[in-house]
Image 1 (cartoon, one colour):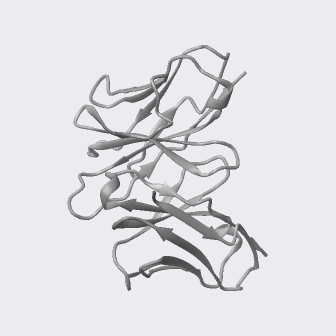
Image 2 (cartoon, one colour; image 1 turned 120 degrees about the vertical axis):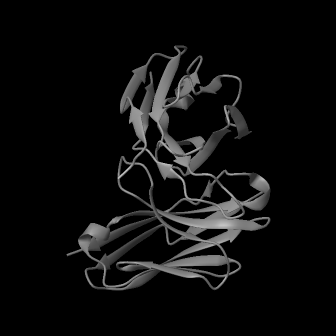
Length: 111
Length: 116
């Protein structure tokens, strides 16, 4: 069974204070690992797809990296508007197109 | 920018009633999905739909649930006889043709279903 564990559950940062969110996964053949952002009461908003260990992707203040067991979402000099829940999801080669999500990390950035 | 749209945004229904949740996926996408998120819990896969048939479903998607693409644009989720535990946010998603590499799924804003 595919499993995704995210840590920490919640993270409070001051504006400008960089940090990283962790996503550990167990999957029978990774097809893709996805990061989404979710604002309260809204649907997940796509951020990144990573396919293989060593891959990195960047978008503004966010950078996602992937190893064979985990992924990190690095947030550099965050702003209050980066406050949201960040979701990690995996898609397994044996599981068709379904995404298995983690519980998410709720990020709060204080001004 | 193309987006997935869902209606209604909020639906309140009596236990035992049938509900239909509606979605308009992104126009050139071929894969369609329903996920749900119970308050405070993780997003869970329900069903995927491709080429006018269910391609995969989870153990949650039992006989009470059905999906349909009645025309070229809409994608619906029907719950035949709602239970209290069906109360959740339901998300529709769509993705483009998938080859060897996966393509990202784009989600709608959700329908909050409340069963009373």
